[in-house]
Length: 392
Image 1: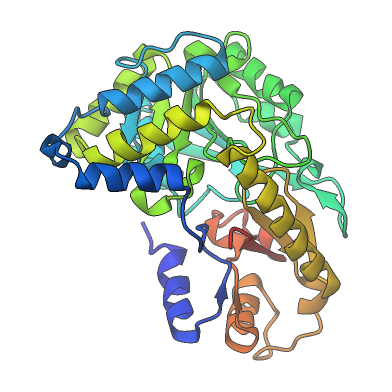
Image 2 (image 1 turned 60 degrees about the vertical axis):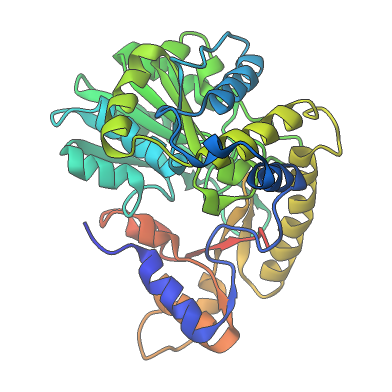
């Protein structure tokens, strides 16, 4: 393992104090529904909320999650056997890989651009000693007015990554950092390969509530024949803009979830009772009642972020940094090659790390080079790209 890219860039942010659009968290308060619920619990008489709770998730939270996803998937989900609460989506991904993959197995990872190298996927694969393959999204066109929908998987390359040894495929929709919302047809292509080769699908759907321009988030586990082979990952940090709370979850069929539970109970065991039972659970219960309300938190969040997205894209395009317009999530990538080519920094080619260091020091703007998340063989694919977060 190596140091994460965040070690360097957080330190640079502290030293240069730029406008930090690198890390993915908001700089405004979370919704009142979860804040008030937590405040009421802290001031209340129930002292048991300050003690250990059920290791696989507080009963109120797993019941809220089961009720929500039962409604969203159209099937009855068992709160006790088919839902696991984790320390953020990070742990959910980690336990999924460690709990279900053996050393001789292969894992195909379709979530590049981002989750390829310094990520829970690859760290867990390293510990588990399995073999991983990245399948990269590639843009069908270049220049301005590119949509995240223009970033696609090559069907032949995708199919070539499936073999008798393939145990798992990892997807991310809505996607970080491209912002791609995989269409039903694209997901069906992946699903058909999973069924043909008897492969588990891990669907990272933490940005499920943040979509724009009429894009529709399709849950992989709802496709025909996919519930029994899909683990779906979610996050309170993304759902309620509380990334520091580190509450995530996984749901799926009992026989698959058992592997995650075994890793979780022997490594983590449990997490904050207060945050689970009196903040996240209450938030889910109340916001599910407002899911069709234009003023509900999730609808309002997407609406406000769309304005921010359009503003930053206009700014980037105006200075020659061609941005991909995301359909979902709160990240975007832009191509800096047009302005990078006119810079002459330290007599070296202007790669993404050098460009970002220049931007932070002289322009007081910080993003993140997506190439940091690539394995060595794939870094050239992101040599002209910078990721920005517009959740500010």
